[in-house]
View 1 (cartoon, rainbow over the protein chains, first blue to last red):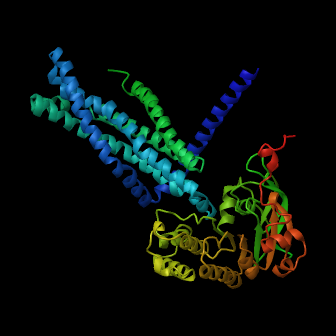
View 2 (view 1 turned 45 degrees about the vertical axis):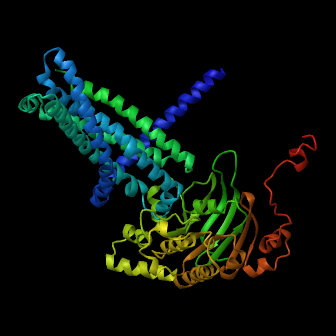
View 3 (view 1 turned 30 degrees about the horizontal axis):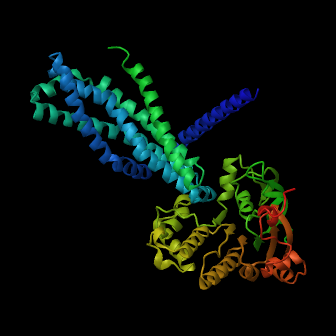
Length: 259
Length: 271
């Protein structure tokens, strides 16, 4: 009976936290119009969230492009299909690696930063001060960051994919010696703007919603202590990463279920 | 006290969780246009009282009445409407660390009014001048001392000339000159604007000097005594005398409730 009670209590607690999160997300969506009417705040956040994530995104994208070109070259040469290298690298980056790796890096770089920032604002009573000034912190603080995250993520993913392809070009064309014309032309003919690039961008936007909402929620609901903020930043990375991976499977199944 | 209080605390009971009650059946009124100081030991629920008035927390039972209107924390529109009429100085300032001194004071003006930037500039400089920090307007919050930060927070609390101003420990961390200026400013603001002022502090001399009414609160929100500063200073009640004179011995206990020293050091068997 005690075990059943314990399980029941845990289940109720999990459901309550999901409900709490859903309610927070709903309130965040309701606050969005206020942020849209103040584009200056959103641009500020795009700079803070997006621009400051550029270095890690560009470095990772280049490295992934290098490695992908090398690995694909070894595999494709076995089957005499090394001329397909450009296409495979492009599709892998634009459809999957670009959105997913960018989102995981975003959760680690910008997500933790957002959680810590909001958590420390809460610990320093800045959120409470705003509320007592009759200013809705969700509209003034959270919504611009939420929009900034949603806008930044596809841009960062596009840059990740772009530098990844350039990295693959360096390895494939300049080091291995694959024909440059073939490298680019097979991409031009094999990559569909809407189906491949468009779906990749849509995925990124969804991941932007997940990562930013999770980061803001963890920061807003954190216990206002140093330990609380530390736990919240960790939870941001874990929850956002798992959310991105789960959603990636669902979106891939929906978007690319037919050849 | 005035017949029409601006704030009325009516049989309020509150605790952050079910295990510990911070305020137990507290009833209190704050007169319109007067400075009321709430004095009491640490942890007796003074700051919680301010938060209840601001609608940050909902009372477990009883009601908080704000200028004739019962504060309903579930009604966001009402809460924000009432909060537009109050300013609060937080215990630790609660300044926005990403803004400089000027922008912190300008923040409520920019967010809550449609005033042109030129006018906002003048108002901000006037408020900063009142707390002696006009020359520090350009400094970052990380560049000002704790006492200066508190004065910036004071300037921000009064930026919109609110009807109700709540000060949570306004004198903590201030040097003697700043303390005197802050105390005079609080009194002057009340007299000039007619604002209702709630003051929470441990600083007995300053509170007695500028308050119209003083409430002495003990653990659990129990009201030990209330009256004019002169009445409290003249009180023969041991608890009141001990607090206003800062005497170490008396009915107000310094130690948190605990087992006896002998029990804790193993000199005597626990019951």
